[in-house]
Image (tube, rainbow, N blue to C red; front, side, top):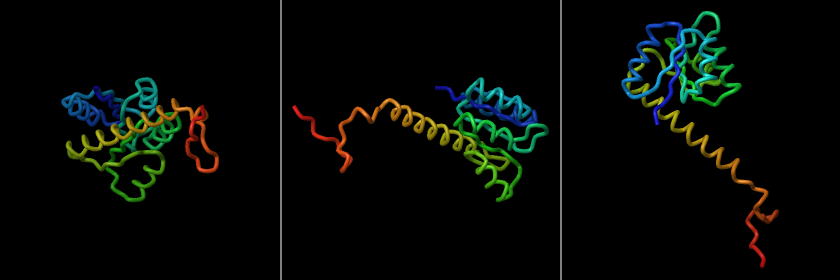
Amino acid sequence: MTLKVLTIDDDSYMTTMLAVLLRSYGMNVFSCNSGADGITTALSEKPDVILLDLMMPGTDGWQVCTTLRASTTTPIIILSALDNPKVISAALDSGADDYLIKPVPTNVLLAHINTLTRRHKVENNRSTMMRQFDMTTLPLDPINYQQKPLQA
């Protein structure tokens, strides 16, 4: 399955460079150069992962991250030139799943994308299975929380 990646950065050179790079690895890439467009595209295209810059005019990366996190579990990787532990921890606390400092080596970026999308798929599969598995249909012993033997 082809990964869908959304890049959101006000620097069009950065989004173009990321698109060319990621497409060369077989990914389907959508690019936005504003936070507001990024939110709209994320909600309509439902990407597998989002690469997001923090420092943008208008709707910045912080607002994008907070807005998207309220309605989606899509992994968000911050790509920023800001190399400050307080900024990194604040970004992760605001809902980002990962934080990479620009410039990022290609193999490191790909590894982070693959790790987050793989983990997200496992979590989605687990939650789907749990929704399908109705605990109320199992006869459980209320004391030991074990399945009761079926009686004939």
